[in-house]
Image (cartoon, rainbow, N blue to C red):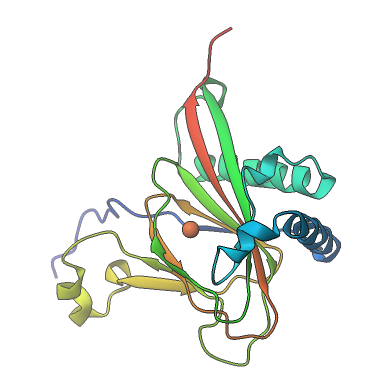
Length: 207
Ligand SMILES: [Fe+2]
């Protein structure tokens, strides 16, 4: 039998899932802060059919729960850099994270998109309504490679065209910002709350 001498996975797409332990009180605090912000920017939410999202960089907000989430997002990004074997010296890089909060009511969804210009994009799940069955609230990633339809016939995991996840409250997912994704409509009566962020590295200024 001819056996391969080497099998490499080229151009793979890393996707991470992190679990924040005992997140109930943390999530309650984030939702309270979100409700407070939403009450202040009701005008923006009216123009925004299918949901509300916060204005500006959420991580400029110094509420303790938001500061804690910024810290967790930073940790997740640095951990991901390590896991993918990034050789850049962390001290040589400056990380900027821009975040926003989303409340998706029944019927709310996000069309396929990428987050151009960033390195890592993430979503932290504050509230994810329970469902019996179906795709409500699932995030689905779409393979960025071309010609994949030809490969479907093999039913092989490396050439799947899409992958969906349904993170629970307290979970944070992290993926490369070029990876297209979308969110299935929320079919539950309760709102789905999530906080999305983009992490972008620049060369740190020496000094
Ligand atoms: Fe997104």
